[in-house]
Amino acid sequence: MPKPVQQDHVEGCRQAADIGDDVLSSNGSALDAVEAAVRYMEENPVFNAGRGGHMNAKGDVELDAMIMEGSDLNLGSVASVRHILHPISLAREVMERTQHCMLVAEGAEEFARTIGFPLVSNEELLVGPEVDRWKEIHAEEGFRSKEVFEPGEDRSRLGTVGAVALDDEGHIAAATSTGGTPSKMLGRVGDSPLVGSGCYADDRSGGVSATGWGESIMKVCLARRVCEGIERGKDAGTASDEAIHYLGERVAGLGGVIAIDREGRSAFSFNTPRMAVALVDIFGKRSAFI
Image (cartoon, rainbow, N blue to C red; front, side, top):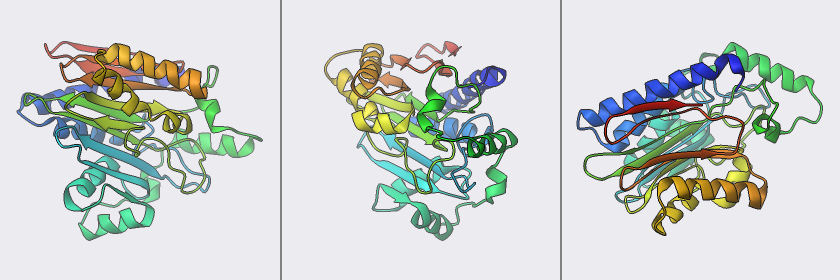
């Protein structure tokens, strides 16, 4: 997250939190709230999701997303989809209109066409800074995707996006959307669309959305690990801190989580140099951090 765009990330998160809160304040569900918040961030080119998502090795924008509701553990997920501005909404369509939990690549895009879901060109998803970054990477030798999460890296426009929410009915939902890592291999899938890794929600524990180096997050099922901590009686903050510590200690992983537990206590934790976060608590107090 280069310094010139750090405030843009904070403001983008703040706007997304406000949008989610507006949904909840209008008697909307937690599921509606997280979808609305993530849709806004998918449209904001400062984030690595939707418009502005990282390009793969061939110069295409391939996107992953997942949404989950905690009442009955229903979920929808899409991975390696192209020509989709709002993969989080397509993931919800998978959850609500199919017998499956996850669709990928051409199958997900064919499903989108079948239901009349809007498609866009690859060019509509590209933004100038990401194109420049892609060219820089192709001029480098020995580039490693982990580099962009380490201290000192100031050229990447990171920003996998996510949201978690608790509604008045006591239901929890979580959502995560991403463009993955810069110049990833064609068809590479990270943690974001994988249940229990990049996203999880359960009314009996909490909701979690993760960001960071996906290959390490998958190895420890990071989102589910946070929820397991809550199930063992820990608050969202302690469970998040312990999960991030385990990520670093066990697999030298780099990442962060946002979480909310069934009591409405929200938390975030990360071991990357920075992570932008915004929240509205159960009393309506708004906060934003980086």
